[in-house]
Length: 372
Image 1 (cartoon, rainbow, N blue to C red):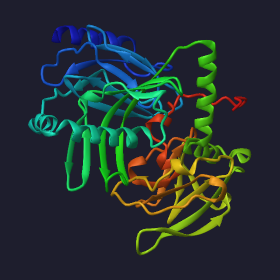
Image 2 (image 1 turned 135 degrees about the vertical axis):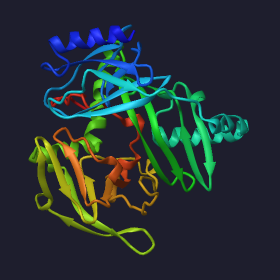
Image 3 (image 1 turned 90 degrees about the vertical axis):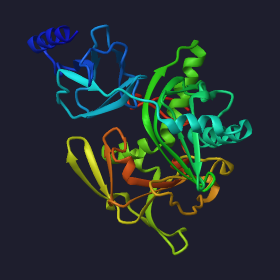
Image 4 (image 1 turned 120 degrees about the vertical axis):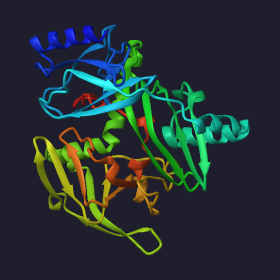
């Protein structure tokens, strides 16, 4: 087998083992035995682009030529691996995966919880992971039985060795979510979660496909991606729908003293091609004056790093308001509106309530003429 890998490497070297146009090609092998691994799922994080290694462990994948991407490798018997690639960067000839093992405490966690306790934990997970007001008729977690729960000192931790499957018939995606972190604090108050995501577009009738298109456009227009894409690309018409300002925490942790400001006053610099850094020294507060929401659907919930989130109030007439702050004093985004440093940020308000049920892939193409 090792001889076969060496032969394949020579073959790739003769032709191309790096990006050629918009394609990459390499071998995936075991880090201990150096044997090729078939059936490894290789995909671009947060996209609908993926591939599977063949019997020789070889995969070919098309990637955007003008974007930095994160390449993810998944196999049940190996640790999840992600590689960040910048424009034109090589991934090498061979990618090595580390074999995984079963942790002892996982077996304990799955067996000690009584059915009613697990049911309560599962309901809490669904609400916080998918979103408080997700449509239970159209959006469902297909394989909840794979979840492992652990609660300690009020913190609920959820993990899984397999990818979670979410069937979203509202937006027309079947999602694989590889959960890396899920920690829920204060009985559903603050939340920290992260993972790698793959979107498989669902097929449907002409009427269903039209509905998917409308719903995707609506979700995009309410998301932070639209705001940051307009900000990075200086789309004045789109930015006209937003009001921005700064707020602060008071001594009890509430968000107070909102001060409006001009969007032009934000400090933005291009740190590399199509990547922008927005300097923030307080709580950046964004109001989307184009949208209206149901007040009952928003609670005091935040996606945070250290479980801190302040109280917040919506503007009049249920117009959504969102809050972001960073210990590093910055928000890094690309021209498509994707936040590139999410683990440095904390957030509260409307955008923090949009969870997995509202996710769109990065390669979702915005249709300027889409009608809501």
